[in-house]
Image 1 (cartoon, rainbow, N blue to C red):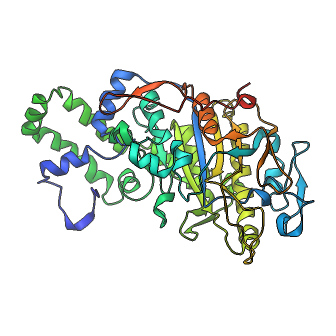
Image 2: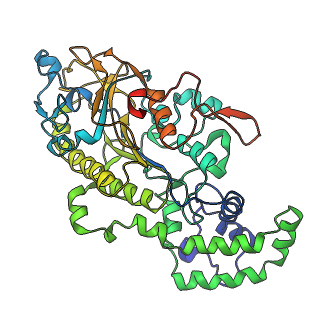
Image 3: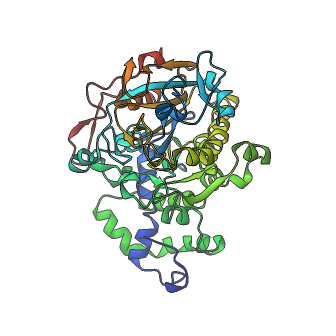
Amino acid sequence: MRLFAGAGRRFCDKISRRSFVQMGSLAVGGLTLPGLLRAEHSRGTERSHKAVIMVYLSGGLPHQDTFDLKPNAPAEIRGEFSPIPSSLPGLDVCELMPKLATVMDRCAIIRSVVGQRDEHSSFQNLTGYTMGETQRNHYPNFGSFVSKIKGPSSPLIPPFVDLFPTMQHRPYNSTGAGSLGSQYHQTRADGEDLASMKLRYIESAQFNSRQKLLEGLDAFRREADRSGMNDLDQSYQRAFEVLTSSQLLDALDVEKEDPKTRARYALGSSKHQGDGAPLWNDQLLIARRLVEAGVRVVTVAYGFWDTHGNNFGHCRNNLPVVDAGLSALVEDIYQRGLADDVSLVVWGEFGRTPKINKDAGRDHWAPVQSVLMSGGGMQVGQVIGSTDKTAAYAESRPVHYRDVLATIYHNLGIDPHEFVRDINERPIPVMPDDARPIRELIG
């Protein structure tokens, strides 16, 4: 739905009933705005909130060339990069990530994440299930569970904002609310939702004047009354307040950030890489601004890592951008007083093959990958698990990828084993019974 689509449609004086219903249905967490406000009235709001920023590395990061280098392995395994020491004793990282090396004492690196299937999709990271399982059983995005359980922290801020762009490889794209129902879909800060939030197609003065249309909706009110919506007037009035509020728009506008901070993040590019995501550090900065504004879950698709060929050339171009963006985000989480409340997790759908192929690339490798976590009140400054001498398999302390999601839920104050009601009032578990928060991180 494109509500304010410009000259092709006229709304000023003769708006149709259908168009006004659309106006009330702009996506804020997937919930219609009046519905959001009614729900918020019944639930109440919180003055503070826990939050998570999930950075999804579409395509699968080469763990052997970033956080789990094997300098003593044969040349066809170890690759072209050298390790450098970090601020965490005993942890070396890739030479192309000197800024991240300085903040490793504020991170936890899990080198032994297992359990993922060899499939190019975000589904396992976002739901805890494979693409096929998610599609068959309508498993919700973890952010939708958070929206259902916690609700928004403020009537003017959606609980779940998705910064994934629309990627050419469809399974990379973000999943929805599934069996919880569309009211718990994410707000997509891309395309139509962002256009609506920014009121891109209409002057604010014109939009504000349309509040007068509320006076002419008697027929619609009568229909709504028959449906039990007795608070229609107040809900639609508040809906206008949400759409014209500057709080969310301010968070999305990185031009309002201190230039020195923007310089720390560096820019990257909004251009898509391959059939995956852009490597665009503005998204990391926006994510931090959104959680400070009250958003509970922000998901970011970041770069393209399916390096079947020219793995090392690709990393030479990309890793310095990653180094600037992620190090700045970790610094901000700790310097801005967010470390107890905001969790950061950075991961892809799998790792890459130990052996370099004939095209100087690394292929898919589902048996193990490395994951970076920070903030969230976690016990950071540690490396969890290890791999064998070729970084092929977990050698010690294997951590199932679902345990990463269980840890996120724990940090948000959600029992990963609780049951919630789906759209048909059936109880469904947040996570399977065998998913457990990572004990080394939660203390």
